[in-house]
Length: 67
Image (cartoon, rainbow, N blue to C red):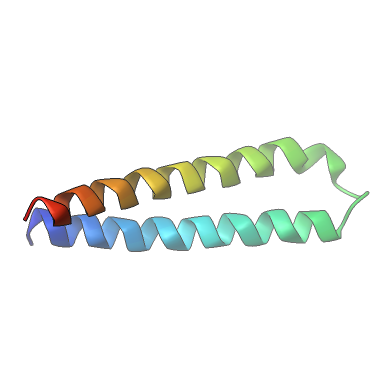
């Protein structure tokens, strides 16, 4: 598998992880005020997932542009 293919696969996995985190944050928001103590942890997890996804997408774009 080439580096580009591996990077595309990584982006797909991170997209899935980010979507799951977004759903968890949304579900938590719907349950408020219950579970309000979990907001920070779930929000940080969601933020991290999207930050990793953004970095991987930028890396993929740079890799594709250098071809």
